[in-house]
Length: 291
Image (cartoon, rainbow, N blue to C red):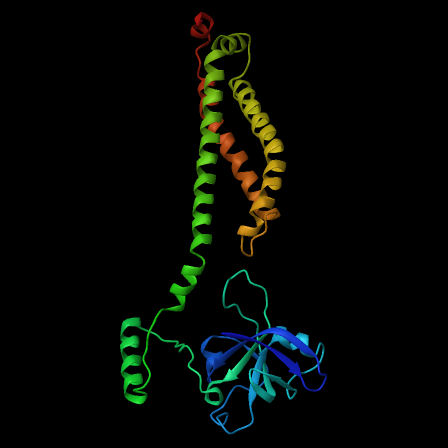
């Protein structure tokens, strides 16, 4: 992809830092880029014919806001009086986080420059690569196929750091939640052990076992609620520093926060239920003798 400036002939307006990409007919269909207006390149768009170009939506909005740019002419990329024949959808090329950039597609047969070869295929990539090499060797002996890679591999390479961050964040999140639940379990278990005599007294004077169960569940619920009230604002505050590392994910998603809080409350209740239910099975006579 190259970069240059263009000047619109009808309005004499100048647009800086416009990217240019050389493509052949069928490129947009192969890359699943929609063509909203105008036409695709054709076999007739070759050297000697009138220079034509296709622009993306972002550049179209800069050239003629609210108007159809098809048919307008511009000067750029060492070519004078180039006509716009179509408007294609915006796409990303360098980074998944990049915003829309002004882009001009040029006809391969008119430029005579080399360009990457994109192929949509089914089956084995190795067989397709071998077939393409043989085809190029036969049809164009002066050209050579090199640096062959699948788009999936290119994509995975670009977002490798994002995936690593996602994995580490998930791992630390699971570890943190597990430690919190183990801590709640241990705290309630310790409380049950230390209050064995109190439990025996309560049961001996007529307290129901469900009352004892609710006693410890209430304490654990208050513990989880207090931690949530303190931790949620801190988490939202710290999440602002991670916003630049996230792609199409907001740090204040109400649904995600609600699901996380529900899981924490449910996990805390389950972690405290086991020691709390053990407290209801305490023998009152033995509990009164416990020291």
